[in-house]
Amino acid sequence: NAGVTQTPKFQVLKTGQSMTLQCAQDMNHEYMSWYRQDPGMGLRLIHYSVGAGITDQGEVPNGYNVSRSTTEDFPLRLLSAAPSQTSVYFCASSYIGLADYEQYFGPGTRLTVT
Amino acid sequence: KQEVTQIPAALSVPEGENLVLNCSFTDSAIYNLQWFRQDPGKGLTSLLLIQSSQREQTSGRLNASLDKSSGRSTLYIAASQPGDSATYLCAVTRSGYSTLTFGKGTMLLVSP
Image (cartoon, rainbow over all chains, first blue to last red; front, top):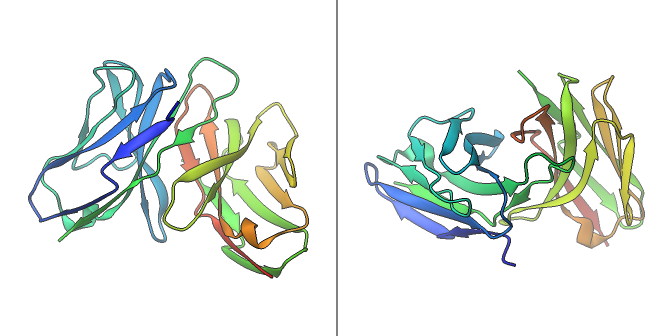
């Protein structure tokens, strides 16, 4: 049981490049989400999904795309990277429909856009 | 819009002290509140989850309380140790959703 995994751990992009941050969980969680963490801003929700084929926007969705084709995977795509997207990105997952909504986080991806 | 505030932003204490971290939220319509720990350069580790119908949860030296009506939670750490040094984050979920709204955290340093 690996929990929530994220790849890569570190990435440097040039402005305008695109890339995909990978997130996978092996706990059969319906709910998955992406957050970004910036100094002084805390963690902010980018996108989330309540199941395969269902996604919705969070607080800061601009510049990011997501899709959920399987329960296990929830990739985050940066279409045209900008320096403002330099951040640490965390993926999280949890069950839905049970009393305990405890969320589990991945180790994060540190992204620098130059 | 839900806002979560954590006070203090930073705290430095000598080893052995009992301490309290505070979390407040503006909208009392929460489903649960979760406390996390984050070590530098690492991800978030869940410490305690309190459902809105509960008043407190305990795990080892940690005790978290929730007063939903006043919009407050406290995390009590007994007999602090240098290994407790980390940033502690509080987050709430709205009823029916799992999206978390986070505070900005309290950075704790426990010196030997």
